Amino acid sequence: AQTVTQSQPEMSVQEAETVTLSCTYDTSESDYYLFWYKQPPSRQMILVIRQEAYKQQNATENRFSVNFQKAAKSFSLKISDSQLGDAAMYFCAYRSSRGGSYIPTFGRGTSLIVHP
Amino acid sequence: SAVISQKPSRDICQRGTSLTIQCQVDSQVTMMFWYRQQPGQSLTLIATANQGSEATYESGFVIDKFPISRPNLTFSTLTVSNMSPEDSSIYLCSGGAGERDGYTFGSGTRLTVV
Image 1 (cartoon, rainbow over the protein chains, first blue to last red):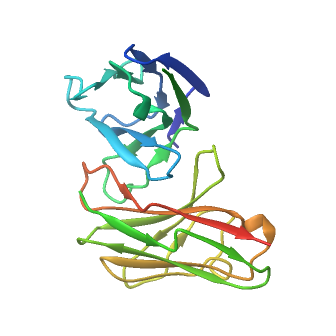
Image 2 (image 1 turned 45 degrees about the vertical axis):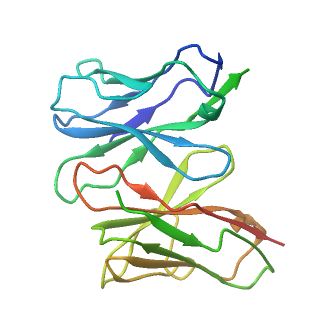
Image 3 (image 1 turned 90 degrees about the horizontal axis):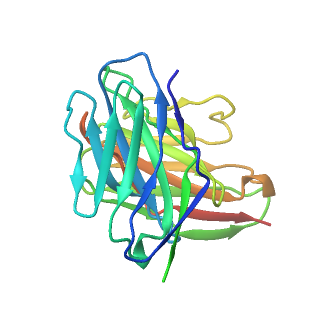
């Protein structure tokens, strides 16, 4: 079974600075998808960024980018120019690309605090 | 991406009663899931809602306690039956249409059982 590990229960960053959230996963598959979700206090889970395992290029969405290291099974999220609105719980998730195995596996989450 | 409307957003219920949570998706989605989440914690999958057939439950969750319906590809309900204070939690539905899609989530239902 796949597992997703987020080893940082909490991280903090100063506004306008950069922070990196770590995520590692364990799988025997070669093709899969990885995601980062943001959950602010309002509870709404929002997809931040996705990465297909077959793509070597790291995904980028505005201030959010990932460092995908397939061999190391690592998928970290970098937030640049942090804003107060980035404060939230961040969840890393894995999903198989095999047919019939679409249930995502979530990490335990990292709480990001942004200091003004 | 699909947009999911979930209701109610919160409720306070008496023990022994039941609550039905609804999720309406603005487009057809292949997969729908129901989760439970304690504040500040990760998501625990309750079940996969299957269109036109019985839901597939995860270990520790049973149909009698959490009956789920999914009559079509845009709608699903979760009922929390015979509630006790231990059922107090946030319940979330989630859905997705395609392989590479990240799943979309409803806004969650905060349930308090007294």
